[in-house]
Length: 214
Image 1 (tube, helix red, strand yellow):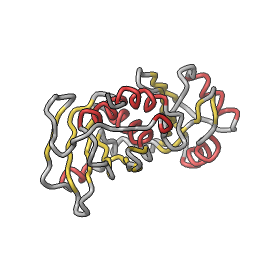
Image 2: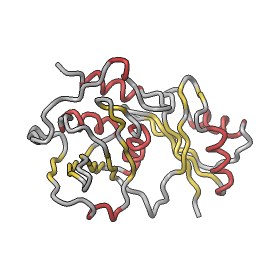
Image 3: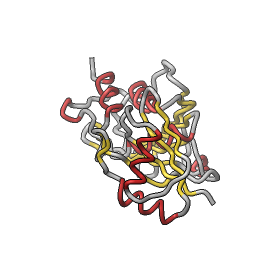
Image 4: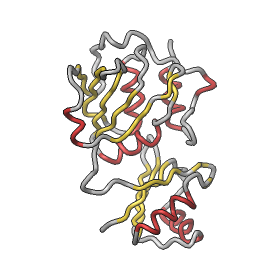
């Protein structure tokens, strides 16, 4: 059985050797380390020999400041449970789909985004990425992000969630068709720039600047 860690919010200066040294300094023996240095973000997947090592790594390194970035360390998805889909809840009704797409696309190419309303009348958005890695990075970085005074909730979706929402209206990629349920632009005050709870937030800072109302 494979035991894998996700290490997010890495500085672009971090290499495989940097991470391996960090784990060794904490007395944690790991096997393979794969660093993903993408234009939008930098993260890594680390293979551990057992669950005990995974637990110790999370306790020791989650929140650790490495080269000026606060690490986010959590269990990675099992290969049998990997999903390229995230669910965003508590989305303010004033948000435009163009700006929402711009926000989520920062973490990788988006195949489709569906918007619906749940039984409590809350807006829910389902985003499907091209890759599970992009989905995990988006869920990790955006969960707790504040829009218009509301913290959005973002989580990875299980496959069965495909059938959870009824009456969907979908839009694909970065299309230009407006969804009438999104009348205004995202307005993020400057003091909230990069306001990802417990994160460095470089990516969100860039997107916030791009999404500022004109």
